[in-house]
Image (tube, rainbow, N blue to C red):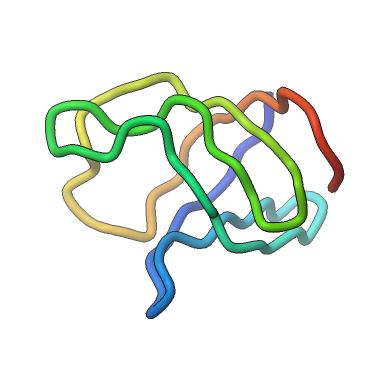
Length: 73
C-alpha cells in the first residue's frame, strides 16, 4: 500500500503519489458521496487503485493509503 494525496482541480480529483512523483487525473471513483467515499479509483493513465471506503474527507487535499490494483504508473 502506498501513501497518496487526493486534491481537487477544475477538472475534478487529482491523484498524487509523492514517493514516485506520480500525478494524474482521476477519471472515476467508485463511491463519491458524503457518506461513502473511495473504493476503486481509475486514473487517466490507466492505473487503478483501491481506497478503503470511508466518509468523505472534510477538506482536500487529503492523504490516504491506497492499494494498486492494476494498470500502469
